[in-house]
Amino acid sequence: MAEFWNEYGGLILEGLRDTTIMVVASTIFAYIIGLPLGVLLIVTRPGGIWERPWCNRIVGWIINIGRSIPFIILMILLLDFTKFLVGTKIGVRGAIPPLVISAAPFIARMVESSLSEVDGGVVEAAQSMGASIWQIVRKVYLPEARPSLILGASISIVTIIAYTTIAGTVGAGGLGDLAVRYGYVRSVPPVLLTTVLLIIVMVQVVQSLFSWLSRKLDKRLR
Image (cartoon, rainbow, N blue to C red; front, side, top):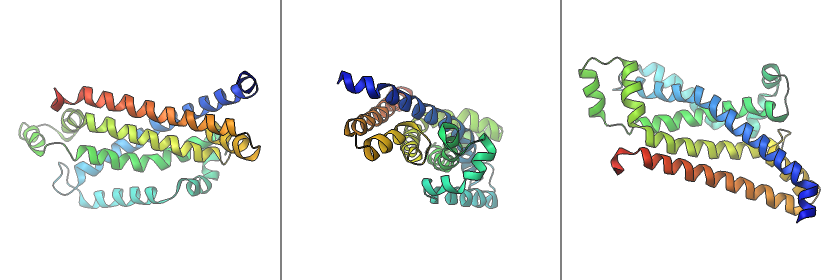
């Protein structure tokens, strides 16, 4: 065991660091895009507080296309765009743009689903008191849907973790890259097993933490 960690410990920690960076950065940027899109889907839907069916259809169509493209194909399609945007097609930086573009539509649908659970009576009450669209979104929709949004965030982050392992197989680095290069190509099963265990731990930590936080903020459980 000591010999294994002496030889591969540095690589494994570097892979864990790269995966963490990809997940955190991609999640932040994907939510910057996906959260407003999800809100837009809710407020522009038929019967919404800013009903715009044409806008809802266009945004929904774009999101559906984004969700339909497999991540590994999207990475290939975006190679030139990624190079233009961040200066490289590979490594951690090269993985973040396709991760963001792939995750944002998924997050938008998660946000839409969470906001759709908000009691319509609460929204109508806010409208009757003269609240603006922005005030309703900020003071009604988002606070009321907070527990569901947090659970949705855990699912989104777990999905992004899975995407990073796929990205690692095509030169993005991280635990996925280690699993392929050392666990498969060089036939070092302990490296493969260690990377899999680390990914499982990451997923369990995210799921447990966000589930606890969601329960903590859920007014219905108080």
